[in-house]
Figure 1 (cartoon, helix red, strand yellow):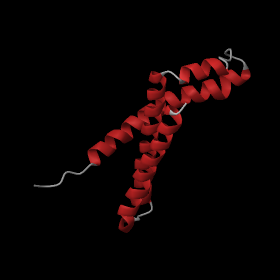
Figure 2 (figure 1 turned 45 degrees about the horizontal axis):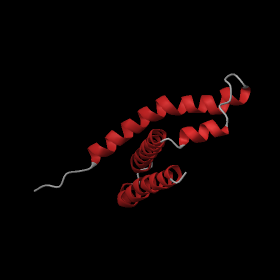
Figure 3 (figure 1 turned 120 degrees about the vertical axis):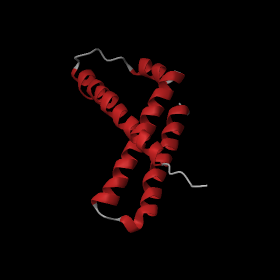
Figure 4 (figure 1 turned 135 degrees about the vertical axis):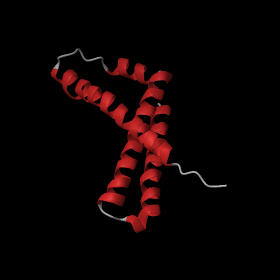
Length: 116
């Protein structure tokens, strides 16, 4: 029996992470980096934001966004090192560093989000 490559799953995570990052991150950056500080939109306040973040659905959505963005980064960085810099002899180390870092970041994001 031949061993199947996880490459298709990694490309799926890459494309999902790119889509999520392209659609959600600019909105969050605009709201919390421009609109609220400049007073264009009324500030929701700390207690309201904390109550939103304590809702389980909001935690799952933010966790999913963090995980997808991290795996998008890992796949892009892997191919930058592997193909762009021609570090093919270090492919196993690069894979371990990139995807291990994304997994560790996902665990850290889950700990931070679900411990609040």
